Length: 260
Length: 223
Image (tube, rainbow over all chains, first blue to last red; front, side, top):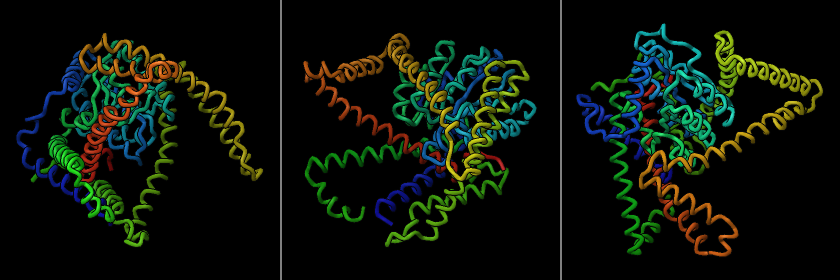
């Protein structure tokens, strides 16, 4: 095992330890200390309005591959879906979810059915509310458009892996006057979503969705662990810059160069 | 210590956590110092190959999902015309694909000409047209951004986009090389720094999601 592999493993073990520690320590006041993200406040309002007005919420978890790293953001989307159903299950029109990957579509239906069962409202579960919109990027966008254009749908939450095609979805949503909350792990798509969506989530904000939608104390604990490791990385980067400026970075390269 | 683990289906949860840990450890301890695959590495490769096969099977399930959703729409008479066209084209494409497969087996020669024709002359032009629509949508969105969200970041965003577009024009680069240099600097320094910062945040979020799944806190599956 290389030194970089060892560092990676130590990083993951420390990260897991911190999450478990924070979960155990902060169980009593789970939501204290979360900074305000306007997008999530608007989403909560939209969920409340949807329940009151009998309108529908739409969540799309993108077209990431389940066996690739982009699946992580789709899992965040599934946590958000669970939170949304728990909050909006009493509405006349249950939330609808779309995916652009068959494996994710199966997980979407699974999340829908298990959440409705959990909250004792399985009679509200409609299997057609979990849909595979399309197999290719543009067919996925085209398959999502009828849901956007549905008059009953008033808010669209796009949390997952998207490409440039997401602009077609947000454009249709804007023309309908609906709320669009978006977050993705793909950098070009993030730039597009910043310009086209009403409430874009930048960078790691998307991974905080579960914590803001009451998906459980571990989501809040993982946010705190991320904050600590972000500071660790900042310190490491600044130290690296200082060593480089002082001209002593070569010493580290000589020591670790052969091992990394 | 209660971690709110959702262990309602302990067998599937234990299986998922076990497989996750084996794949993770296989990533770090998959090879011995000589570079040979260890037992853990072989097990990891076997599990990942299995996942890829299951993803292929999921494609079939996905087709049934697509068909069932649109059949339900036809029955409920909502967006029925689009759903009807989708189902008809699905059946035709599936039929042609199966015909090509049967012919390939009977003639012992790979022949997917008809399926390729559908992709090259129907699917590809439609997706290219959507790409053109996308270009217009993006231009419109950039123009609307300042009207929708007038703040410093949006102004910088639109300004940088304009600067990069103008700097990319060959005539401008030839007559005002300073603009091309500014463009290169923007791409090399602030853009790269910002992208790396965002990627670090995404990497931390991805690890956090992985840890939650490994500990059974997030369970995007039932059993």
